Length: 307
Image 1 (tube, rainbow, N blue to C red):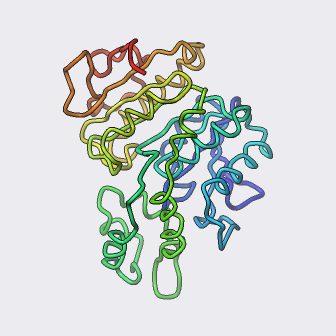
Image 2: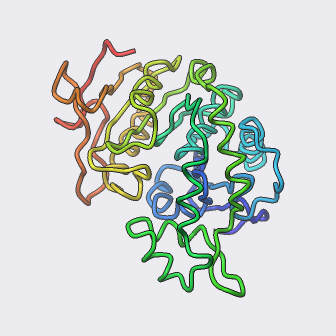
């Protein structure tokens, strides 16, 4: 898992390219558990976004287009094209904009809990939360204890300094990155995406209601929308087996040439479960893939009329 660039992580695998893009505060190595099974499907590479991890891009600029340009450069320089791009939150936004603006580089996109229009939101509520953090974590065990179920995730996001462990990213830079999302709508990019898309929505989403389902409906190509019951913002940590099953089913359809058929798994709003032949995905059990997205039993149902 080495690279000539400290911000580009080679997770292994051979064959088609798979690019992993993390969320705000994260870094490429947070994808380690996911990357272990993704290597069955191709060569898996992760990128530290500018302002995060070991990215040399400090300070800024912080426009979405700058992040996307970084991703496009990694795809080209590492011969990953056309790549499958898997993004969480901020990384999901960058994945969609990459697919919209560089369609020759992207084969398919997986988006996890990301909404294209968060205008009006500000970073102010975050400040109180971050102020509640210790000035420094005394150990990695302290990090795990403080963040509970996401403890392993956040141990990847800190570095040791003289007084303890600190977030690698600078909070003021993170505020500036996120501030753009409160000023811009990205629907124009969603509507230009022609490759297959899998949009994953947790039951306890951090995004405005309805937008992830709408995202799947408004892409210009085949799309799937799956709701994961019980999960929070980081689905791949909260419900790893369900996440794996959905992504493996999606990738298997791509391998079988089904991804271009336009089948949509479209679950609508959470309170619509069981109405109009829609349903969410249950939590899943250890054991890997859940089969094709249109044959997930009672977890997700085909809705040919969606979108």
